[in-house]
Image (cartoon, rainbow, N blue to C red; front, side, top):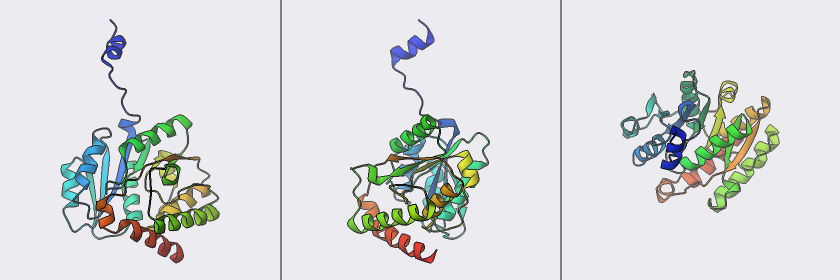
Length: 239
């Protein structure tokens, strides 16, 4: 029996796409309660994970490191946009890196969605694949968040010329060229609109993919669903 026949007989699964060339960038701020599970779940499939601890005052950084992530620390809280920039710059130092996945540390994103998005980028040959809550019927953000996010989509589509259904989803796959071209200068929540504007400015190719965001009791207890929506509006007006 050949080695390929033996593998087929044993039903050995194919490795996930891009395992050795994909870095997961995980912004981290006071998520010590859940970040260890998030990192361990990621690294079961994708070993290359960098957490950017954005001035946490709990033990988030230690827990992330114990779970196997590389950890870069900001001396004080600078915002999610700044954390993403730091993490992407870190990943770009790896010459074998082909793509970066931006992934939240609070347990709302799922590894299976990220894997499907990586495979989609490989299949379509696009520069980026962006997750969309509004293409997945299982994701049910609250009314206020839906209103704000729809408004953000309208605003971003208008200003960027890029037509999307979800402009502020933190689950993204960016190819190396996109990472090299996109400039993130907005430190806080408006970085999401800025990324889409950069996609339009550089004429990068993009596809969307439905993702199931888990709005958990933990994330709701921290007020993230409503607070992030309010932050998006404030940052949009400030810009």
